[in-house]
Image (cartoon, rainbow, N blue to C red; front, side, top):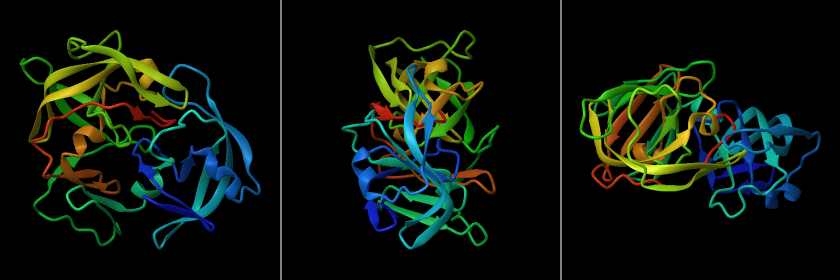
Length: 278
C-alpha cells in the first residue's frame, strides 16, 4: 500500500499484524531527507535476530494518510541504518489499520478494503475463526499441524502477516510436536536485530478451522531468536493465509476466511522481513 506523510508518498508499505501499535516504520533510508522530521528524537528498536538493535528517528505523535483516510496520533519511525537495503518494500504498518478497521484483503481482486467496525457485516460465505490477544495487539489463533501423517497436534500460533513463509515452527526444549526432517540450513528472515538463521522442512498438513493445507513447506527457527511471544508454538505467515480471501476483525475477535483461486497451489517458503515485536 501507499502512505502519504506530508507531501511525500511512500509506496510498497507492508501490512503487518506483528506491528502492534499505531504508527509506521520506514526502513528505506532514501526517504529520510524528504520527510519533515521536526521534533524527532533517536530511539533503539530491537526484534527478531540475535544481533544489535537498530537506531532510528521517531516522531511520537503526528498524522499521515492512507488514501483519503487521515490517521492521527501516529508514530513515524525511520531507520538510520540499511539493514533492509535491497528489500522490495519500504516499510511496515500494522495496528494503525487493523486496530481501527475491519480489514478485508481480497487476493483474487488485489484490493484492500477498510470497513467501519460499527457497520461491518461479513458475508455468510466466509468461515469465522476466533482470534485472541495476549499482552499486546498481535492476533493469535488455535490451529493444528500434522508433521508426518500422525494424528493432528493442536497448537497456539500468532499471525505475522508480513512473513511470506507459510509457517515458522518455533524450536525450544519443550514442544508439542516432533520437528520435521530439516532439508536445508538457511537464513529464513531478517529482523531488526539481524538475520534469523534456521532451516526448512515440510509438514503433511496445516489445519486452520475446517480447512487443510497439504504438503506445506515450513521454516524452523529457535524460538528465542525468531519470536518474542511467550508460549507460541508457531508463527503463521502470509504464505499460508494468502490461500484465502480474509477479513480481520480485531474488535469482535474474529478472522474470516474464504478459499481463493490460489487455495490448491503448492505452499512454499520464502525469505522474509520481520518486525520489532516478533
